[in-house]
Image (cartoon, rainbow, N blue to C red):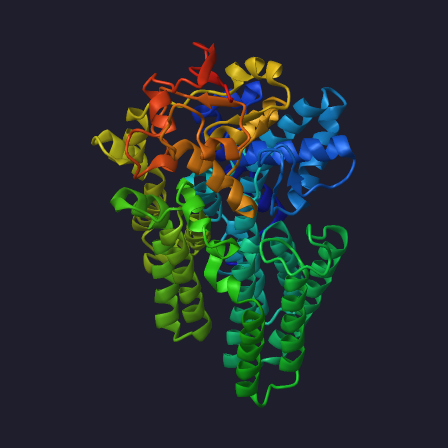
Length: 576
């Protein structure tokens, strides 16, 4: 019979998802066991975290980026605190950097494990034991989830997926008339936004789902009580987060890309609306107007929320065009890979809404459609729709069981078929590669970039000199040396990015050009065998980057190091 997710089953689902994620990660990237991390964001987080440990105080900026001017990172310090906590036992056995690297190995699988348990929990009241592990299996194998949770990925994306699942499950329990679930709803909303404001839309969707249930329920009072508890928890957590982790502009700063007073105001509006709902059971249309007015007021105060990442600066679009995970889904392989499981979730919610003539389930259908649209526009957001697909899989299995009641063979066949269908998107890339296409084949045909780690010893002699390099190598260069870099792909320092882009795109003359001089670079680091960077896309093949890739440096660049082990070449800038 459907019921609660037991503690033992929850741990099983956690273990299944974490184990599958770890096995996939170590199979594809065994170098993490040698202390290497898996993406630039992980290195950049470790650079800031190491600087904070050396300074003994929280820092917002990476001071050696931006040609020495520093780059402010929008990340809050919540995940930093988790990494430090995970590193504590390792510091008894190894030095500080090694302990942090060990923590970075753990945080991804732990996040995916929690996602597996949360996916099994979301619809546990509608599912039975023996099927919920399937949700964990999808969470632990789906590329849109595990690429952000592999060992060696020290970032918050997988954890945000956990927050979205907990918000959905808590909102469902509030809608079912369990007021105490409101505490989980509100505290998860606050913690999720503290982790990253990317969680804000899902917090609003969750509270909105409770509002739709309140509007359509025969007994709205328990739902209103749950939403009121959620509002208090939301406000309390955001106030606490602001008190202990204020933004770089201070506690009064209204910064939208991290926890700030802007989200305290949102929590306060949410709390006020929820409290009024407890008094409007006989005039529910007023509750709808009040909720809409609250959101409208907040969006009027902060209209940049609707503009998304480009609101940071008018030139931000040029920066984000260089970030693969911010690009839209392209082609049928990516559509299946990133949107397949979410589509299953959409069809399930729509079927339940139609069969039961249920407004809350119709609202859930709209929420999944929103997730699919996000994932289609920016593939990094495909995590949420994929986890929605994982969460509904056990409920689909229950429907299959009921449909073929008394026919165990058909039941088993139907379950296997649905499991294969849910797991098929996780293998879409490999299937396409087998037929000579798809991202995997394209990646295999592309020259591998130069690894930074073997070249790092050559950087020691440069001290704190400014080095112009590939923008994707910047975080690891900062982590493995004491040099200064020109720019990195973080929207708080768009001017530095534009200086880097202009320097690489500049057509070299007899002397260093103004674009290169503006970066203050004394050295230029290039990987001649790597693919042509997107940073010079659209330019004629006569840019500084293209000249260096062709082995034709301008006369004012003096070759200092050619390293066969890494493939990098280092040049010194001879200025008049």
